[in-house]
Length: 87
Image 1 (cartoon, rainbow, N blue to C red):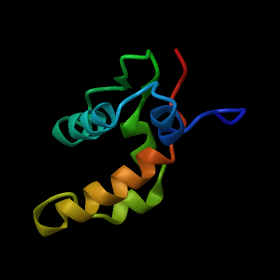
Image 2 (cartoon, helix red, strand yellow):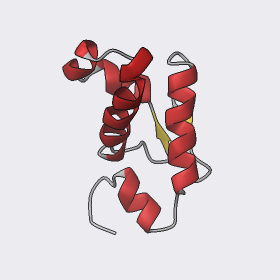
Image 3 (cartoon, rainbow, N blue to C red):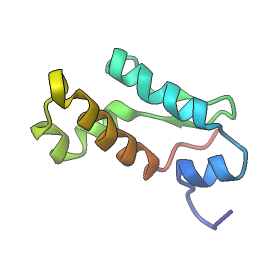
């Protein structure tokens, strides 16, 4: 694993978190953006709401209707580049 903060793909590749956990984190945010940080079984956590709020591009994206799939795709890309908080 590279030195410094790890991204979710780094942690997944190392077997520390699973792809299913990443999907669950995104699903939780989409169901309830106010749910708070998602904690992975490893103890790492990610606050997707904070990530979305800190990214101005998300303000212009429609989250419902036909654009929902596009929003999820952009959200997944942002989440995958994020550095989760270590346990």
